[in-house]
Length: 203
Picture 1 (cartoon, rainbow, N blue to C red):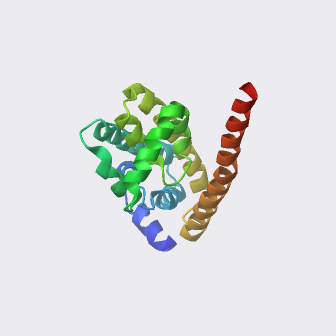
Picture 2: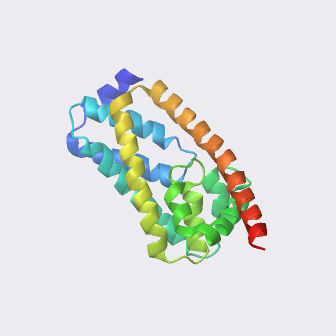
Picture 3: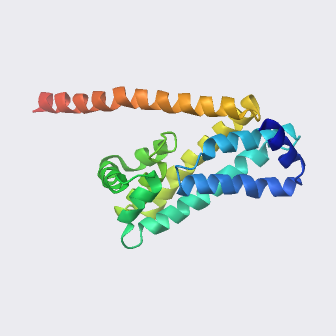
C-alpha cells in the first residue's frame, strides 16, 4: 500500500495535493465512520516524502474540517435534525446520542465543543447538537474551529513521524482511541461524584 501511495502522490502536482487532503478532512468531519484520520496521516506522509511543504498537510485539513463544521452547524439550525444522529454515528442509536449531547452542551457548552475534536465518535454529533440546542453560531464555530486547528497540527506531526506507514497509523489511532476512552471512563464518573459530594457539603 505504501508504494501505491508514493506513486499516486508523486504523480500529482503540488496544487492537487491540498484539495485532496481537504476532501479527506471534510468527509471525515461530516461522516465520522469514515477512517479519515488514518487516511489523512498516510496521505500527509506521502506529501512530505515527496518533498512538499508541511503547510500542504496542516492547512488543507483545517479548511476541509472547517467547511464541514460550518455545514453541520447550518444543518443543526435547520428543521428536524434528529435523524442526523444515526447518520453521523453510523448506528441506529445515533438519535439518542444526539439528545444526550444536547443535554451535555446545555451544561458545558464551549468547552465540550473544544475538546470534542479529540474524542473519537462525538465530534460531529456535538456540533449538530449545539446548533440544534440554540447556541449562537459564533459560540459553536469558534471553539470547534480552534479544536480543529490543533487536531490537524497533531495529524501533521504524526504524518512526519509515521510517514506513509498505514499499519503504524492505524495502530496509533486505535491506541489513541482506547486511551481517550479509558481516561474518560475515569474522569467522568469522578467529576460526577465530586459534584455530588461537593453539593452535599454546601447543603
